[in-house]
Image (tube, rainbow, N blue to C red):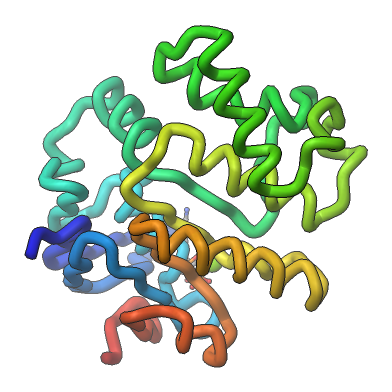
Length: 223
Ligand SMILES: Nc1ncnc2c1ncn2[C@@H]1O[C@H](COP(=O)(O)OP(=O)(O)O)[C@@H](O)[C@H]1O
Ligand SMILES: [Mg+2]
């Protein structure tokens, strides 16, 4: 079976004055294509750092990350951003939508960046708005939407280019219970469609939805 992610010996250190902070220490993992993983651990345990390394948003101090057979460390900034845009979707706790763009424009942006024409981008954005039950929010900008709506726009944006993998950093962390449940249902559908999801959560109860789980503590793997 091919692995969608292979990480070997990932270490990330930050210099804090005279002392070195190890945000992550010697973490290795493999995720077979189509499988999904939850990352669990207390605040400060290195979860976000790990996700950023897996998605090529940060470079490791040591170790390597392969996503879909491409070694991220070996790529220059330009090819890395193009690869990220086509292969990886990101979803964040605080949505990170463009505040001056409408829901539809936020979703169409990664398509335009991938060189798709306006018509193709619009058609795909409309399709995703419909999938997320957001047809009537198409022309709203983020401040005009609820948290649940914003997160659905962010998920639609992450799916726009038909990624192989979605990396989600506490995507329900800023939502009420009902919206959180709704967003998790959407992620369940995404996983069933064959897209791998790696999701960070504080909530142990969430791990039952995933085929694999990884526990971090103080930057180290504990299982
Ligand atoms: N840019 C940074 N500079 C210095 N220290 C950082 C930086 N990013 C993260 N850290 C430190 O690395 C550790 C892990 O952080 P993080 O990955 O955000 O943890 P988590 O997501 O599990 O809460 C923490 O001690 C944090 O303070
Ligand atoms: Mg975090």
